[in-house]
Every structure is written in structure tokens, then in C-alpha cells.
Image 1: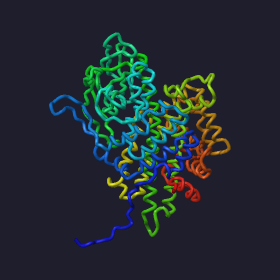
Image 2: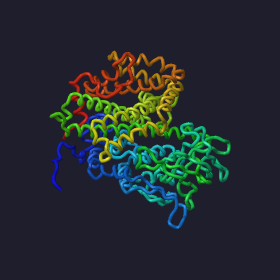
Image 3: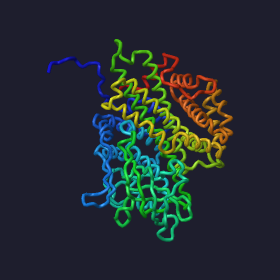
Length: 569
């Protein structure tokens, strides 16, 4: 066939780069939050994850989503979820990095910050495989408070040799744990749970129960066990450890009805299940299941922030790569002033999201056993100021960040797709997958309104924590009139939060923006902090951030912001 044209001015795939080495904001955040001792390991991980073959696994796992096998060839019920090999390779990388357990089981200084950084790097390759790891990680503090059960599980959670086999717990090298909370009639209203648990013997903590009911969203249905919310005989909500296999080696009575056909997060399985006298063990105090599982959810919420920050970072690197290589109107896109404004603004948003996420991870490091328990405490008597402030950040800023960063990620990834033009909209590249992934962190583990109401609840129930947080923000805002003005505008709502549900989103957004501004002002180059404040606090009340990206006023800031977004060498 006759050659019709020459192919040129097309952007090569972004592969074979070090995800850690090119990210100046990550280096800085890791150092200031106490995780720099792990920089060498993270650098090696960044090289591994940025390789052509590993990046391709993310695409492969999403193009070939999991499949439910309800029966084997002989007609026996198996309720098995079959994954593409790419999924298992990605999961093995996560386990090898210790993301599932190391920060709890080997609590060195800065362990949670280093774990957060590793999670952030993995999230740039593929987001769905993070879900089972997040829930396993969040389950460990709860399970460790059950000595008899933990004794049978501990070494398998500590191991890093990922085991994909569907076998009883005792036969596995490593384990994964999912969650079963929401039901058809309840959704986020967990008090509407109807699943029942009947004591097989005397009942009580650590005793065996039989569960009957259903779960509408059974996260990671292929996990080795799940923490499930159900009602015991006294109608109280309790937490149960429900394995896929019974202790006698037979399959548990958990029937997977179907897998969810999701917009994004397609590499990961989410199921609908029914329990037909499923075996379970009561975890924690009877009737205290809801607080226990909400404490677990607090840890997953921080991972939602990290996951959204990771999606933003991957989308930004793709957009920057495209703008460096694609020419339009006689010049690379990156040399056009308006494009530089948009990219610099995106880089600013990405850095602010990462800074806050690692700051919250440092608050978990500072919390010790209390952070592991997911408690915030009401009194600070006898506590050091630093520990009390870390507690306030965990309790108030984590749900606030989950609301704001996860929301921003949706608009962020859409803007990056637009930078990549028509090619960005095509499934051949990663941008459609990133855009489909972005909304899930805003919905799961508590949607936006739930997070904002949780912020109000914390402010109302824990006034000492609120005061400490406000005092810390005041220190971070001091000397900058725009930040001081924005904080003063929030103070009435902060001190009478229960009456301000109508403005809960504005209050929550304002808190996050002030926290991000204070962090950048304290630790980032002055140009970064000044650009953030000028663009996010332009109106007298502090605003809620740029309505669209690309509204930076000072073109002189762009070289610094863009250089930090892609660090050469």
C-alpha cells in the first residue's frame, strides 16, 4: 500500500522513569514529616514501579477485570473470584513493600509516613489493587486487640510473600482482610443494618456466631476474611471476623451473588453477598461494632486522600510529559504562557494535596497506640502538646482532607486529560482510567456530606481538640493578612459547628485550604506558598480554591512550580 504520510509530533509513552526521583514535593514532604530514613528504599521502589513492564500491569489489570465463578466444573459451589495475572503481580509488589502491615508491626520512627509515601507511589501505577491492602492495613489494629484470634494470624500478616491461593487461613502464607458494612436499605446509614448474628454457644467476645443476612457492597470479596457488621441477640450492632473458610476446612456459607459493574476501579472486585449461617467470631465488645469499624474506616479515609493524591500526581506527570513533547503553533505546548499557567496551577494543587496527606500520616506516627485504636479522645490532661495536636489533626483534618482532596482529584484529572487533547480521551493511554478512578475515593468510606458532618461532629464533641487545631492554624497564618482574614471568617462556625450543617462544606473546605496554606508556608519554597495563597484566598472570606485551574496571577512563579513538579536527573 502506498505510503500516505509521515508520523511525527506524536507523544511517546511515559515509561522507564523513577516515580520517586522526579518528585521534589515528595522528597521535601518525606523529610519534614520524619520519613527520610526510608528514602533509599523509596527511590528503589520508584525505579521499579516506573518501569515499562510494571506500568503496563495497571492497564492490563483494568482491561481484564475479575470474573466471578460461582460453581466448579462438577457443580459444587465455590464462589471464587478469578483475577488477571497482572492483578496478582501488582498485589505481590504491594505486599513486598510492606504496605499492608509494616507500619503497625514494625513501628519505627516515621513508619506511617514512609508507608504513606510507598502507597502514593503504588497508586500512580494502579489504584484498584490498593483497596484490599488498605482494608487489611486498617483491620490490623482492631484484630491485634483480640489475643486469641491474633495469635493464629500474626505471622501471616507480618509476612510479605503475597499468597493468592484460595485456602483456609491456616494454609496461607499471607492474608488479606475486607469489610462488609453497607446493605441495600442502609448505605452510609449503618444503623439500618439488618444482618443477624446468632451465638453458637454462650456467646460474647471471641465466641463463635452464625450470621444470616446480606451485604450490598462487600469490599474485596476474594479476601481471606472480612470484618462484618451484624446485630446480635440483644439487637446491638457488633463486629464479626468472618473468614472465607471455616476452621474445619470447609467453605464458609458466604454466597457471592454477583460482582459490581463499576465505572472505575475495575481491576478490583466489589461484590454482593448473602450469609446463610456463615461462621464468624465476635471481635471487640458486644454492641460496640459500629465504633470499632468506624475507627477502622478512619485509617481507610487517610488512604483515600493518599490514593487521590496519587491519581493527581500520575495525571500531572502525563500532562507535563505531553506538554513537553507535543508542539502546537510552532512551539512545544509547555512554552505557551496559558498552558504554563494551567500546568503550574495543577502542580501547586498536587503538592498541596501530598503535603497534607503526609502530614496526616505523621499524625498517625505521633499517636502510637491511640492512633492504632482510631480514638481521638476528649481530654488532653497529661498529654504533651504535640501528641494532643496530632490527635486533633487525625480526628478533624483527616475527614476534612478526605472530602476536599478527593473532590479536587475529579476536576484535576479531567483538566489533565484535556491537556492531552483528543489522544488523552482515547483508551489507548492512561488518562481515561485515571478519570474513571477519581470519583471512587470521594464516594467510598464515607461520601462528601458524611465527611463534612463528621468534621462538625468532631468540632462539637471535642472542643479541646478543635481549640488546639485552631491555635495551630493561627500560628501558621500569622503575618499573612489573607490567611488571618480567612481564619477569622471561619471561627464562628468552628465554635458553634452543630448549628452550621447548611455551610458544612464551606467550613470543611476552608479548614483544608488553611491547613494546606500553613504547611506550604512553613516548609515549601516561598514561591509555592505565595502562589497558593494568592490563588486560593483571593476573596475576603477565603473562597474555596480556584474554580478552574490556570488562574495564577504571577507568571514568574511558573518555572519554580514546574521544576518541582518534574525534577530532572
